[in-house]
Image 1: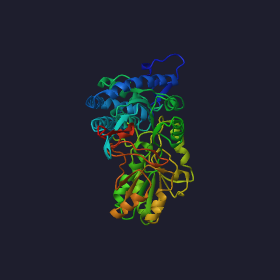
Image 2 (image 1 turned 120 degrees about the vertical axis):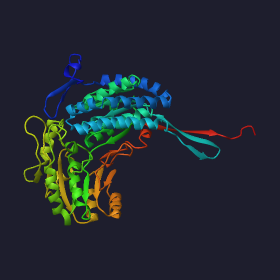
Image 3 (image 1 turned 90 degrees about the vertical axis):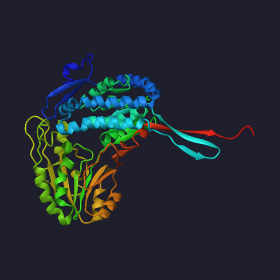
Image 4 (image 1 turned 135 degrees about the horizontal axis):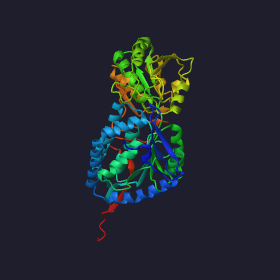
Length: 469
């Protein structure tokens, strides 16, 4: 496997980032941490590379991005296994994530030759708009979905003619480093896509503060997102922020309760609950609350937690000891809990957990836990469901279960969230826009307009006045 500890020689005194396997706590690699000087040098190199990339014919840029997708496709299993080792993801999830990187590159490549401006009717001349690349984009990626979320920004940014400097999370830098190698193998210009692992307060802060970086794309906690927004404000720098969530799963009395109960566990347990879209607030109409809970509890207890490399495993470990301690702090002894099973011994394991009888204002009911824990809250009617769904500062995602299409549309309009599903828990598709309301972030990623988020709109007026008269 790439990235054994000895693969990363570094000058004496360089800080090293330990990459641990969350399932075993074994050391996977030690990676040098970037310094502010490293970030500065990378941005300068990216600036030079971006000029040539932006000047290339759109067809040539598209061709290289498709070639990048093809090279990623040839290395899907390698990337997936690397993701399992550094992030603890189940093998099935990791394979999907690697495939998603390939698909994002293909989709973005299709937009290169369709990045059109407009011709606007005006008196006295011709008016047109031109979409121009911003320059160097700084991407700060999270540890929960290291590969796909890095690609959410990288693929459209490159397609729009920009260069990218990516800082992966400290705990999960390996797949990003490998993707940078594969980009060069595919023929992308040197320094166009650079990956610099490092800590947030050092490398991340340097990327945000660098005057040569035109935009920051950050996925992570709301607390850090606010710091990045404040840091970018000094230079009036663009930001896209995908932050926290505490998403509702609303089950009305007329829903197919069996289907809703069968789908609910993995709606909050996928990736061990380390998902901003996790439906961790299960809101059930009071008249069917007990019946639904009787269906849901055994489904949660039957989730298979174990070795991420085992094809039968549905849920793996948490990312780190710190995250395990955080999750434990929310599940206090006074709460009524339905628990599944999890391995004992080495690894950052926590069982699937369902909390009932919880006050709606309890910390576990309104704060993002980021682990395999959900609360079940009853509601009286449609208005009460909307009230509860909106009773957090977040607004990223959510689900509605009902057979009444009118109720589904009314509730979807009333719930303040950027991504809603009816009779489904689907949140993210690379064809459709993704982003949140409130403290879940700013801006949208993915979808048909993804490339325009990395462009500047220039307006040009050409006078047609006859000056010979």
